[in-house]
Length: 415
Image 1 (cartoon, helix red, strand yellow):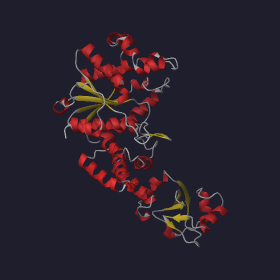
Image 2 (cartoon, rainbow, N blue to C red):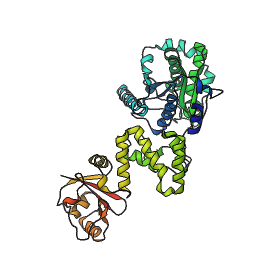
Image 3 (cartoon, rainbow, N blue to C red):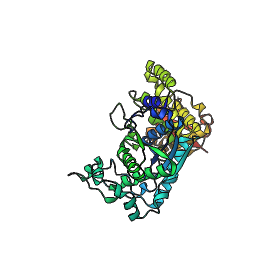
């Protein structure tokens, strides 16, 4: 499969300045793609564009990955209804470090160079920038940007000169990378098209050169029609401290049937033949969610590594009754501690008291009623009516999993 064919098949073709996308099949280029450190983690929205960059890299194109230390000091206003709050320099520094680490995880052993636009902006004077860049940018172009019009409109919140100038800064990035690293292509998400075109114009006006942009479409949840990756709890982050590895895995497990094939093409490295086979088997018994399981495992492996992916897969299969609790390792229980209410206790502890301590019952009286009605499970097994305390044989790798009914679950750490 050629680059153009794979990009088309995976759904990474949106807008591009190339008249013929097959040009990139045989002509290798240096491209750049970047993320502003407005947070200390990428989201799965960023991950979609990163996966597009992986396809270019796999087909032999050279990658320059940018961490926007300079642009992060301003914040991209595109798509924002009001002015962003500025981050401190310490926050930006910490965020840059975190995003660089995520680049290393997502792109793994692929060849790429990481750059920070703060390195070339920190010594540029205001007058120098106006002469070198501002002189070459028509105001009509900047005022015509959709986000500027919306912010300046009757119901808009207005826009500062700093945010208004953001596209100039990003455009200069492209010019700098063109001159210093031979970059002739910028990859971006659909929402970054305008900022990216600014760089193409600067390269043409200032350097007399030719450069291009390739954007990927926004990923849409086919079941809701809304932007993919937004949940009631907010964005899905790649940082496990903001979205735990288990919750990250579960997000993909719960992907809608209508879009799961599309998500596999975007968020995994699985090839066409493999995905076709998975979907064929999946469509014969959708209730088994085979496609979602492959998607969840592959996406989690990419972001968090194979060992963590294997662990949360085992945990998920056990909690949902597909595998035995005896298959859980001590590492799996450590993952579970991040997800479940965990109480430290000991062998011989009274079950009624433990149920109260873990919030599975509001009182010992209610706990006894749950026990008498066979509503309590230990490690997935319904306990005998006469059982009243934690026994040695209940303990697995130092833990006991308690469940009330179908969904209320807690963890006991046995000391």
